[in-house]
Length: 250
Ligand SMILES: *Cc1c(COP(=O)(O)O)cnc(C)c1O
Image (cartoon, rainbow, N blue to C red; front, top):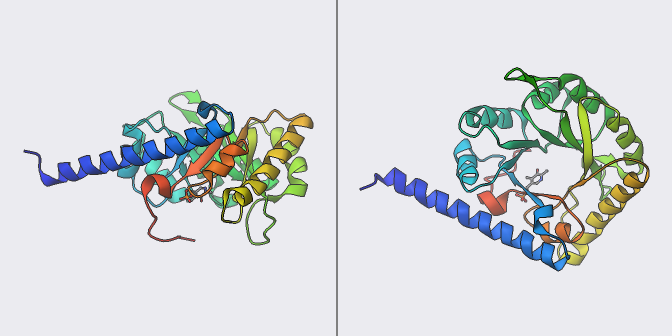
């Protein structure tokens, strides 16, 4: 007979598998409605505030991309999980302070929240990182755009995105992949689609200006369908996969 803790672990693993199945189903249905192939949409599991065991359980279900908002928490999880899960892909999606950029450049594969040149320059300079005798590839980055135009939110204003994108695209330690946004929450798919459509149009404008961009990081638990309908290539999903977070930490 299994000890009770094994039963609990098995129940947790089954719950994780079911939530992952549900989220993948939502992505597939939205992709079908948009006439897109669901394989064009990468699911980023946002594991902030959840422990390494929760990430392990998702990884065991085949999930490979994980997103973190806080540098110290993310780095601790990456270090704890690397021995058993060496090929997970880690995305930094939170507000990025200059004094934390080195840790991000050393540990993460992607950064979605670049919103000013000074931080991009630091990340680029700090990225040449050796791992097992090999140089890591450039950091994959998205520019975070303040698409709803809220004064308190982070992100480059849409009007300044083109200039910043061309400056970031020239930095050798980074590879600019596209744009990211966190719109103000609204109800209803039609209203949710508006800011995502604006981000897609901005991306098309940047591509026309000569940048090779292929990534739109948009959509979370509450609005992933709207984002997929407007062309999201990465959706960042936390609570629908891991359950409700205890409280916002910031
Ligand atoms: C927390 C967070 C998410 C996930 O939010 P959920 O509503 O839990 O899906 C996505 N993106 C960013 C930037 C976040 O901070």
